[in-house]
Image (cartoon, rainbow, N blue to C red):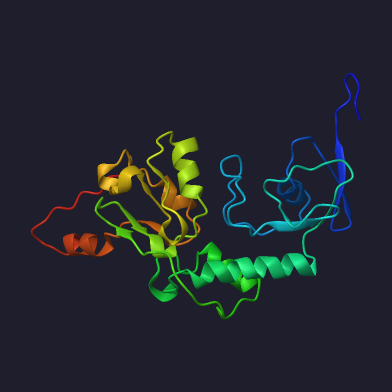
Length: 236
């Protein structure tokens, strides 16, 4: 509806439920505003909406192929299906592809029990990884002494890149390389210790897996606490 003093509203249907949203709202945002679950991995509200992970695929009647809900704007009369057989099959295949290239060492991973990739696997009933093949080149960076990077667990969602650029305003990291050589790293292949990284840790907060973690100094702290020759000072 248009007119002076009249608020413009878009009407659409999601899973046979009538929905009304403001112009500019994406399908994902419309679904979440109305309690409809669409899985995501790379999405961060107002920060990262790139459709990289493909987990939010939905079926839009009249559209060619499946669409990413986080990048598709709502239009008048749109009809969306979030759990059709085609959607579920596509999401499961995408997840299996991600898992096939993932270093699944869950028992020793710092994100064990809090890994979004594993949560999606449980949600979608993926119990085995039937896909086998080439893998991304594994790369570890622990030189900073504060943050640990393990590319073998990275799903290239680019959340860390977005939060470093959009929230911290640093842009210390980006996606480098192509194909199986692509990974999140500082420019020119240097370590975080030699980059513009402020070691703020925001990237570890938004990472959905164990690819970016805080360096664990728990054992060193225990040794210091138990050393009678030391006076331990805790800074908060």
